[in-house]
Image 1 (cartoon, rainbow, N blue to C red):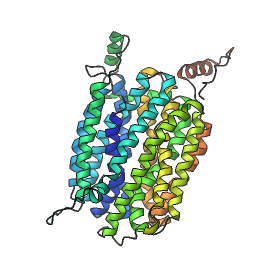
Image 2 (image 1 turned 135 degrees about the vertical axis):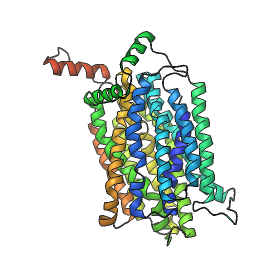
Image 3 (image 1 turned 120 degrees about the vertical axis):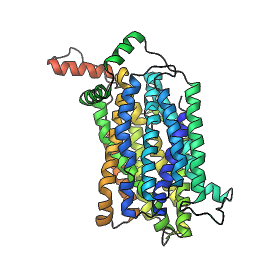
Image 4 (image 1 turned 90 degrees about the vertical axis):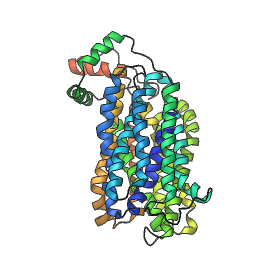
Length: 450
């Protein structure tokens, strides 16, 4: 059921490792990069809760979540093919909006898919398996341009007239094929369970049809947000601020400050970009292998402590980038992003595992979509404000921006210790007690996994 995530992360991996460089190839300045990345969080903010609410109310021959997997895969593959053919910054930015919206259509229902199909005791395993496939897909995607140059000796013809290197173009074409094939595999091979009472389900669907009903459902869910979700929200806000700093600035930081490239047209700049892609490959390879460790840890150790420890590793990795200077020391960057890979494996699994048990089953999709707010809101804030911080505070020092990201992960590691897992049934009891002013005769037991 999680194999489709290999393809989804192939698309994300290509984007994360190459988009800042693509913008600079096309002429963007460092202080413009943050706003040009605004597509990713804004499309997630708009698309994921809507798709989540719609998928909660969907049932057809393909099931509940799988129609969205397939539609998103088709659109994402077309956008991946078009992206490396952009000839101007505005064109690349527009295609990024289309690509991110399409990826979100596929990705959001995958989170609810695992919660739908697995009982509570298997959800940590299910989300960790998603981390495994995410790591595997991103390993290959991140290193593709470097592999083409150094393993397969792909070179551009003499009359090649594009600003974007040919190895990047071919990588995006391969990504389109992998994305579609992996998602199609999940659609074809993984079944979904129909609603227990299909007549009642269809009645509910008819009563909540239309944009106004969907918006109302999202607003109601926001008002009734489980307490566990509120506590995890602070963790997610800080975590994704840190990650966004890395995605925005790590690749150009490697080229400009470790490889000392004089400009984006320099061969050193391209070499730095390819090395940064290799570092992302290391990060995702660690994510892949650490997912196996995470499976074991999640079964034996409190999930809060596991996630906190992993975030501390990520913080150390990003902060350490500031102490690596010169091409001769570039190998240490693999250690830095390897530590981030440990954090990434946990970020992709533990918050969702902690959250899933507190959600009402009939609204898993919409709540998973709303949970994405706490990923995209910090990214939007960074995209809108960080260019000013880069210009006036950090003086366009991209390494310093990466280190700031490490500070945010450090804060997230502290905040996760305040998360308390409350099962959905206990949450409902607490709400009734609070609303009616009742004094319960017996306190509902805390989850054994809390």
